[in-house]
Image (cartoon, rainbow, N blue to C red):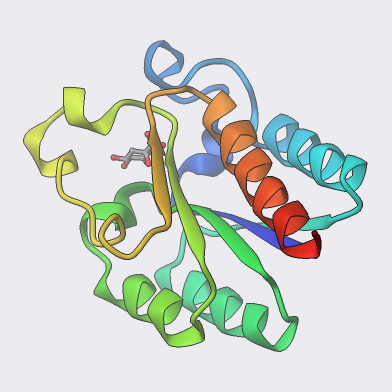
Length: 148
Ligand code: DQA
């Protein structure tokens, strides 16, 4: 099985950006941990980060051709604005998990609404970067169940 991890704008700064909110783990730490975790279950995981909405839309479209079975996505600030990324995920019909490092519900009210949560299989918020591990673990579990 193929998994795809997508991170949106400013998440390239993870580990150095507002560490009191987002922690000290870097995006490359997150990506290599996730790839190792997937490999241990016989799956593969590709990672993509972009600060550009259209790049993320294009990457989601490519995932369909690649027969990706799960997308784990932290859309960053696009969570609260992007109908285009929402439509891309619905359009390719690939199940996805929405991850937020911080507890968006404990922050500014503009972060309380997500264009993704009602279409996501699950959302993970406030677990720090462990949220990615939890999301990847869930996808791997579901894939194992499919094989049985
Ligand atoms: C975030 C929360 C968003 O509100 C914010 O714009 C981000 C990161 C998170 O992971 O907690 O860029 O998605």
